[in-house]
Length: 131
Image (cartoon, rainbow, N blue to C red; front, side, top):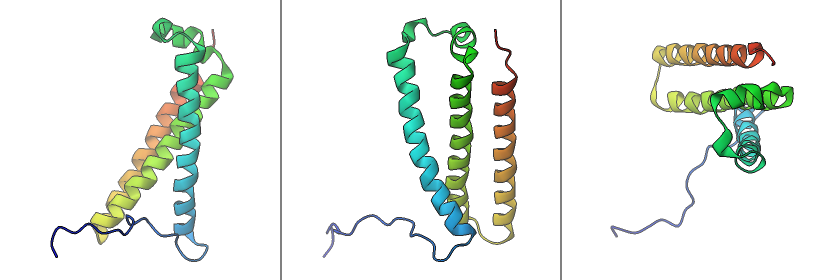
C-alpha cells in the first residue's frame, strides 16, 4: 500500500569490480574522507583548545600559526585533500547527471578548476614569508 517506509538501507556507491581507474577513484574518495575527518578534528582542537580563539586575528595567524612549518604543512594538506575529495564527489555528480560529450567537457573543466585552486592555494601557503 501507499505510505509504507522501506526497511532497505540507503543505496551507496558499490565498490567497482576489478583493479582499474574507477576502483582507484572509489578508494581515494574514502581515504580522503577519513583524512579530512582526522585533519578537521585536529584543526578544531588546535584552533579552539590549544590557542585562545579570541586572540586569533589575521595578524596572529601570520605571526604565530603560519610561522610554524608544521602548521603550514597541516593546512596545506587539508587544502589539497579537500580539493581532491570535493573534486571526486563532483565527478560522481557529473557522471550521474551529464551524458555524452558534455560530460567530457564538464569533467575537463572540473579537473582544470581543481588543479588551478590547488596551485593557487599552494602558492599562498608556500610563499608566505616566515617572520
